[in-house]
Amino acid sequence: MEQEKQLQLLGCMADVLKENGYRSEVVKSDDPAHPSILRVETTRNGKVMQEVMVEMCFIPIPLPGEDVALMQFYATLFTGLPQEQAREVKKCCEYCNDYCALGAFGYFAPAGQLYLKHNTLLRVTDELEKAVTFMADNLSLVLASVTRFIDAFAAVANGVMDVDAAVEQELLPKM
Image 1 (tube, rainbow, N blue to C red):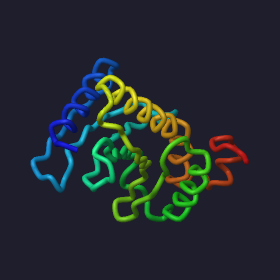
Image 2 (image 1 turned 30 degrees about the horizontal axis):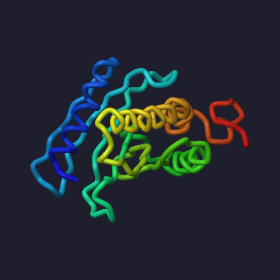
Image 3 (image 1 turned 135 degrees about the vertical axis):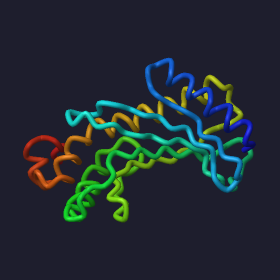
Image 4 (image 1 turned 90 degrees about the vertical axis):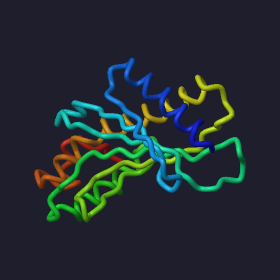
């Protein structure tokens, strides 16, 4: 997909988000190997009132059709988590992924980073309004998963409780 079209979609989405009270900005890249990114900041997520950064971008890989592009949503819930809790955080990710609407939670150990990543195909030949609505719907579902699980992740990551206790305390759903 052309860089110009990517920037148009990301810019329009940023405008929609700003109109709805979100802080968002498009970070342009001049390097074709590194995509431009739409950064969205959400505040007061869950009872822990955690700020979450969501980055949206088009992944620069060849696809079979010219009419679609691969879009990624990458939400960072926490960074700098204690390494002592890494095993239990990974267990919590696996548990939550069974209930996650879109994407999957993961843990990047070198940064102590807990994230939610979702990839989807976007039809770039759609009208601008339809494409941005599709992007917004995906973002909404990503944020719903973040909101649903962030309190449990905070408790587990900080050693307050393990996954089993989070289930018992109804911070996580029961099977």
